[in-house]
Length: 370
Image 1 (tube, rainbow, N blue to C red):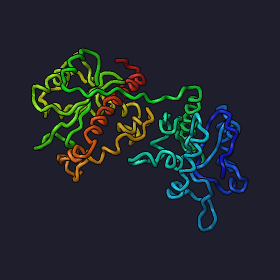
Image 2 (cartoon, one colour; image 1 turned 180 degrees about the horizontal axis):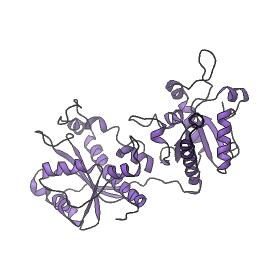
Image 3 (tube, rainbow, N blue to C red; image 1 turned 90 degrees about the vertical axis):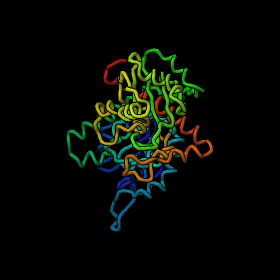
Image 4 (tube, rainbow, N blue to C red; image 1 turned 180 degrees about the vertical axis):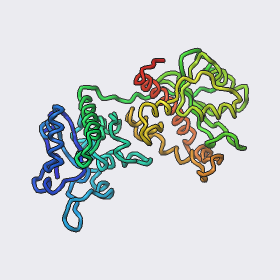
């Protein structure tokens, strides 16, 4: 089935697959579920066929052995994915509404290298996807809304759609590349006298207490767009500017899951971090208590549209024995590889930058300015 609609407002809807009515008519959203979507869009000031272009994650009707409708398989969605993405690039929509699990699997699944999860995890986010250069807005498929016959589900669905359509008046958020500095020594950190910083460690494992564990790389962001990153100094004297910074009560500290940085700082630098002001993971729990939505990489994608900046590094930050929390990971293997050190440092710098940006965003949502 080809894309259908006049696309006057630049909205692309991606559903699951054509059903029997759609297959017979040669156009989408013709059955009972389609009528529900048409009515709901009309209530929100959108004409489904005049204002939108409509496609599906699976472009042909999938049927079972009896010839009845069925959900497409992941393999069928994958086979159609190249065409789906080509349509997004061809039409360059202002907004893409992903209706249900199949649409999420099609558009996000191939680029999301972790556990994808279902629509309950993804619905409601307005994602400024930097790869696709458009807002990505997942929500329930209308067939789920119809089957649920629930006022709560209906209310959530309409709210998701209303918030998605509000983006038509909002400029697309382009990612700004940060300025990352690689100082030859840490005296540059003495310039930071007040304000807030975010900081991040790349270490040899999850916990610092077993023999052989070390902080390998550390980064400090002193603004949303600027970060210092460095390998661990060899002597206590070289560490001192960083220790002074972490001990300074006039400088607020931000981290994602701050107990990790606090524990490693205590164990390896023998100092208590002073003036923790924000933990982006805790704030994420407060803002949205759904399962699977508080990890840094997920938050970076749904808020800033950067879908994958860690998959090249992540395998080396895991040990060969994930059940042993004291095990040494594979970080030294990465450092032995050509360009491995530079990749690790830049990854660490991005973590600090994104934590800083997330903290600012979360504080604005919770209405607590720095």
